[in-house]
Image (cartoon, one colour):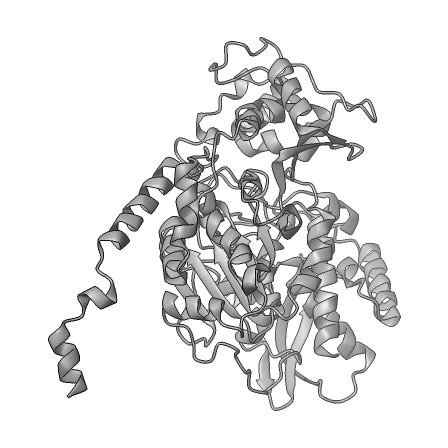
Amino acid sequence: MERNDIIKEHDNLSERKVEEHENSLEDASTNLRCSPAADSVVYERTSMDDDESTPVSKKAKLEKEPLPTEANERVASISTSTGSFSASVQEQEDDDDHEKEDQSSTDDSSDQSDGTESHDDEEKDRNEESDQKGSSSSEEDFDGDEQVLLDSEQLDLDDDEDEEDASLFRRIIAAAAANGIPLEYLAAHGIHLPIEDDEPVEYPFGEAPTSLDDVAKFIQSDRCKRILCLTGAGMSVASGIPDFRSSNGLYATLDATKLTATEEQIEAIEENPSFSLDQHLFMENPLPCLEVNREFILGVQERKWKATLAHRFIELLQTKTNGGKGKLVRLYTQNIDGLEDQCIGIGHERRIAVHGSMDEAECANCNAKMDFDHFCGLVRSQIKDITGQDPSAPKESSAIVCESCGRNTVKPSIVLFRSKLPDVFFNSVPIDVKDIDLLIIMGTSLAVAPANSIVWRIPKSAMRVLINRERVGWHLGLDFQSNDRDFLASGNCENVALDLMEKLGWLEDLRPLLDRNELPESSALLLRQRLEELEQKPSPKQDQNPNDKNCQQQ
């Protein structure tokens, strides 16, 4: 199988898994959170955990280790030899019915079993039929609850493949896709799929970046033509947006008894507050979701929160590069706050909100759009304030009716738990990642798929810069020690973005934002201090001693 064919099949399976199974979109439906995200990642179907940010499944939380034992057992371990590798697929004997598993949430499916012989025979026939078709439907015969393990059997994959070998390929690909593991990660840990070439990579930026100066020089150089950005909750911390998962966040302070819900629904929300943002609950009872988000919806309309310096940095990437034509190909944001829309230079067409946006409204039933200001007016007059801070709010809530289908299912255009991502993400990524020279990752734990797949889908020659308080992305191939193209700018997004803009000579372009009061208070203070420091700093000509100049001439 060719490299492109394998990656294409892997991507197709990944997309379907996202649509079929519960998505642990911790940064998705709730980006309001500002707490640092954890570094762990899970390679199974994920469920929401009340822990600080990390989705977990079957209690398999994988910490920073070269190759976690759980991943080894769960996915693959392949011994290699020249031009070949050994592997076999061992299916669990107690697999449950696949239709039930596809519809199930992220509970521990290993506790469920249906071990009848007839089921196994039907499963075997279905697998053989799928293999003979040579299609990518191996997601049916490998649903993520099977294991890819090793034995000593050698399979020569450099020669023409037979159907058995091709089937093995599909199963390995399906395992990676189902568990959110990029093929590059498998290859990096000794699992040698034939997707790598031995040809040396020619980096357009030359030597490996070792400082922000190197990054700035590359951005300004003609060799950097196409830039992609992937951002998360850390970008919006300085804006003051209330978070969901900190000790003082919405989940910790939410009184579920104040929500308009049945006793069973209230009990479920008390057990797991994120259930208030569940797609299935919303279709049954839309009021808890609207009541939980009331303050945030109205705050977005009133521009209660302002775009940060990190947002402005991305804006200047477009307006200050390539002679004003811009080098920014796309901004993929996992945030739902819509703060990017305050940055006119970015342009709505260059932003893709992977998990939706709070500054738009739509019907969850028919997808009809509703004018956002009209929607906010209905939220203000029909949804009660569970915080008790708005005396003009109604005492009781009434659902907002869709003008197109008549259902009570109008909501902010955000991705709720157990709902699929927008099609624009899957349609745009394969096009946008081509020929990228620089990927800038800001304020994200990179723990949520499929948005994090961008990290390993870009060309191998592209520079990757992570701006984050913690080192993340090891499971996606980010290597800040031995890699020639990865650079970690450790720190909060505001400080690093400001440092980078200073090195790029863009600080004066930010001064009008101070005059118009368009920055968060903390960001404005940070910028003023930096501008004052630059004004007090003597210029190179003033700092030079005339005697030194004479000595140099002699």
